[in-house]
Image (cartoon, rainbow, N blue to C red):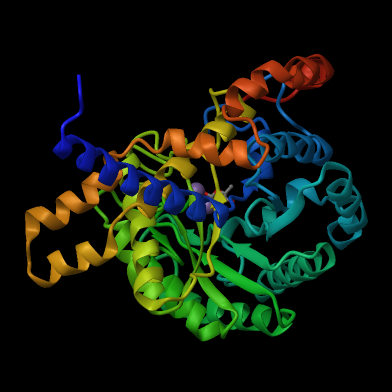
Amino acid sequence: MEPNRTNVIRFASSMYSYTINVEKIHNALNCLEIELPSWGFANTGTRFGKFLQPAAASTIEEKFSDAAQVHNLTGVCPTVALHVLWDLPYGVGSVPDVKKLSAQFGVRPGSINPNVFQDQIYKHGSLGNPDPCVRKAALAHLQDSAEIAAGVGSRDISLWFTDGSNYPGTANMRQRRKWFSEGLGKLHDHLAPDQRMLIEYKPFEPAFYHTDIADWGMALLLARDAGPKARVLVDTGHHYQAQNIEQIVSWLLDEDMLGGFHFNDRRYADDDLTMGSIDPYQVFRIFHEIRHFEWETGKRADIAYMVDQSHNLKAKIEAMIQTVTTAQELYAKAALVDHERLAEYQRRSELIDAETCLKEAFSTDVRPAIREWARSRGLPEDPMKAFRESGYLDRITTERRERNAAAVTSYA
Ligand code: RM4
Ligand code: MN
Ligand code: MN
């Protein structure tokens, strides 16, 4: 059948917008990097116990090796977040080892995460502890962490505190805020000129009555108090059910105070499930706010995109590949939003058209364009398939099985 003129024109114009879309997606993917957490490759569990995986990583060398697999297959995960207590047992003394592993595996150390919650001295808090000796010890560890970060060439120190209380009347909340402000200020003074400190908030758990840094407002005030190198870190799992995370993100962007993300998903609380597994539209909306901010201001938002997940049941490396693929898809969709058109609809309060404009981008199948992008970079089109065919999992399962079987799994 001869194509009629109208069809030809329609086809040509849809080809034209297809080409524009592919270009938009490729440009967006070129600037998306995702940091993997070292602890995401280790055996983790719930407070009721762990189900051990024979292939889980238990040394920092194994964590680097697993993270490198994900980076080699996806091309967008050049850094791995490290937890000082779990990954650098000798503190600053472990820096040379980390540098060696980084050179060996081709992935760099990313954010450095101090640990001021596991030691027995932190039973009643760290920087907010009523005991000045404990506050001093916590600060010393935070400052050491800044030195570790400088030593391994990382920019960000990522701070999460469990400080809080379980029962009303047992803690002086205002006083603790002052201690926090003091301690974080001292850490700020200790940072090198190009370093940043990211302050994470969480409404509850492990503290169940009050948490010292419970929400983005508290984190923002403390970051402001600390100084110009402090920013807020948004962990998507650290909000109450109905909270509008993308609005928090857009306000923090507006204040130039958004430093980074810990991505994960949840159904109930801080479930640490795979990003986008429960509510992909929410991740899209967050990415959209960031892209919209960048379009409107002409500025590039300086955000560390990090994953903070715990795969108790899923195979760890595969779950991480799935996460990266999901992040790319949702970011690519957000890159497709037609900002000019959206701004016009918003100005005229054309509600249905504005919402449809967003949904059109969300419902576009971006996978062919992502495959094309991967091909153009010499990466596998299907990283999961490539991983499964690589034989890596079989090899590490054999190597690590015995050690993992001997690990501790009990809750009590
Ligand atoms: C916390 C928080 C921190 C992470 C720890 C392991 O809930 O999200 O960012 O480092 O878990
Ligand atoms: Mn987190
Ligand atoms: Mn968390």
